[in-house]
Image 1 (cartoon, rainbow, N blue to C red):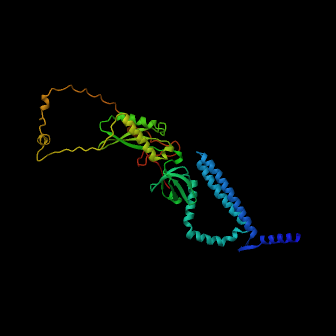
Image 2: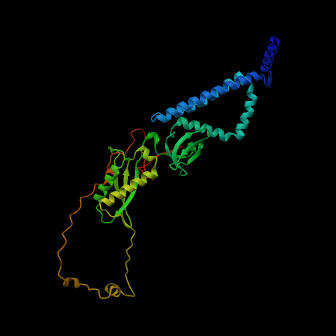
Length: 369
């Protein structure tokens, strides 16, 4: 029995020392291969557990979410690379002896894998640059909008508010134009257009709309540099064109379509309660001549038997209407904006966000990456 055990042990030792591959001056044995696989597996498990723990902490954190995401990627990649290096050393391979293989691999990377390497390097730059981070709401030059969910080794995953995941190559975020609506967790000013009928009291319009905006649960409290305003921006074909300028919360900014619809609804409710008419399309038609006749002769053809000019003076005049009291002039928020010493600035860094249009006073965080 003892002889059989010695034979089995000797056979195992021989199998452990059995050569599988000779590369340069190094020999890969069965025992070295098993040790390498064991080390790589252990480091892979440790990396997965560490990444999972950091990810849970990142989901609970708010202010340090960007730093924890950076730590998550560094720990995950670092442990895997360290496991691979230790595994190759335990297998008995001298990394310096792989120079020929590394040169051939480099040629292969240069010819076929340069796109993958480019996206990986771009992803590393995105993680360290932090001009766009996980949790930011961004808009690309092609028009895609959504929140950054993950910056991977090849692509960045952006999720829209309709729960559609868009995979953007990392290099596009580096080389293209990216509009970051929530850079460093800041908010932006938005413009909500609306119109009222001609003849409406502008002061009542302003008061009603501002009251509705301030009562909204996602409007930030006003400060000296961030105030809700109502601007008269034009004279339309059917009414006066206004804009509500308001500073919403950062969470509301991440849902621009729903936020715009909510403010529009609140404006409509406020105008209805104030008895202010919303305009409807209308066209005035003026005829200068009819069948070769003009003036009263043309009107006589359209309205037979109408009273002649001056006939009204024969009737007893009724009581005259009292003169309407002139309305109180409405404050001009746009004029106050122009006369202000400086445009509103962010409390953290750089100019505040603005509306999606190209106004100088309302520009979102815009970065040519």
